[in-house]
Image (cartoon, rainbow, N blue to C red; front, side):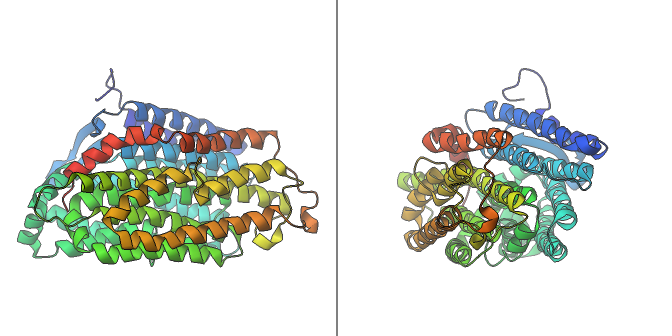
Amino acid sequence: MSGFPLAIPILTLLTALPLVGAAVALVAGRHARGVALMTTLLSLALALVVWTRLPADGSIGLVERAVWAPSVGIEYHLGADGLGALMLVLSAIVTLMSVDAAHCVHHQPGLYFALVLTLEAGLFGSYTALNFFHWFLFWELSLIPAFFLIKLWGGARRGPAATQFFVYTMAGSVALLVAFLAVFLSTGSMDFGILAQMASTGALERAVTAHLGPVTLWLAIGVLAGFAVKVPMIPFHTWLPAAYAEAPSPVTMLLTGAMSKMGLYGLLRIALPLFGAQIAEMRTPLLVLAVATVVMGAWAAAAQKDLKRVFAYSSVNHLGYCLLGIFALAVPSTGSATSAALLTSQAMALNGVIFQMFSHGVTAAALFWFVAMMQQRTGGHRGIDDFGGLRKPAPVLAGLMGIALFSSLGLPGLNGFPGEFLIFRGVFPLAWVAATVSILGLLVTAAVILTVIHKVFWGPAPEHCASFPDLHHDERLAMAPVIGLMLLVGLVPQLIVGSVNPTVVNLLAHWRF
């Protein structure tokens, strides 16, 4: 396999490790969190090994392949490029943060941490599978533990929130399944690489039309709907506020930091390579939806009083920037050679999207972690108006959370800035109207973040915050690497862009719009 001196199935090992850890945690009782911490640390180490062993040309590396059921197009096919490997690293980081934040789980800790590790396995499998059947198994696997984590450990309205989350996500999965069954019936293949190659020459659309008629556009719509629910994109977002608010904060960290990226990854790995021409046909309405996600997400965040709902809608807003960059890429082909300026803008936008996926995952997870700390110290309070003046009794918490908030705002020097800058720099030449309107989202987001800082950290402190304890030693040690990562990636974005750009160039070279 590429980059490995020995035939070590590292991607299989990475996916299996959390499942083994889940089995141990299930019977470990009060030691389950320790088992989960060790498992997630090992998973992060393996994910970093994958990151360092990628092919230099941006192609798929570390390939593992075995025949399962060739007569129905099913095979065990794994691989990773810069996009997939970065999502593996992000998933490992966010899961580790979630486990570290969940030190107050006393009700059935074995089951709780087993479900968290199972969800991590689903994430890893989704980011490495290159066959639809295999990929779909892990796509669904991540849904089941997330549902039970909300249902069993969530807030007062956890039942309806979990059900809405499950129904919406399952509806998206059904749309994906129907679309790919149609593709398989037309082509006889479920391999992403083979199907992408067919799509690049127009053979995929011809095969679908020959077998099923002119339905390729409808298949593209089904695939887009499946991923739009997971991101989520307005108007498919209505499950998100309740799920984020009712889930325990460590679980919300997983939902926003890792699971939401599965939808964006699916758009880049599956939707654009296979249905790029159809997405280009729908480019204008898709850009309208992306702009709506950016602007309406920011305005909805501004209207909230619950901190978890503020950050939930803020996540919708930030993921909207990724959707803006993705849909702006799909410039309809004119039949002539693609200009260097167009390719440069597309590469900048795509680099920005991938950077933003990683950056938002870390920052959003950190913000919900801080909310969890505040709830633990105040007996469950999390309203913006429930706090005030925290900078005096808790200067370390205020300072570190302030860094995370300014990262979410997109302050230069922090990890939130490079991705947004690259997206807008790439999108303006491709879709200047959409980019211009989306700037409203930046302005409203700034107002939202500054309002949170003003109301939570400044002004008179309410009675229940008079003796608000600052972060203790262990919490400071836990947050230090997270804040350090925000600073490192913000000051040296080349650490990510330099590794991802070969994959970006490789992807754009094979996509057909």
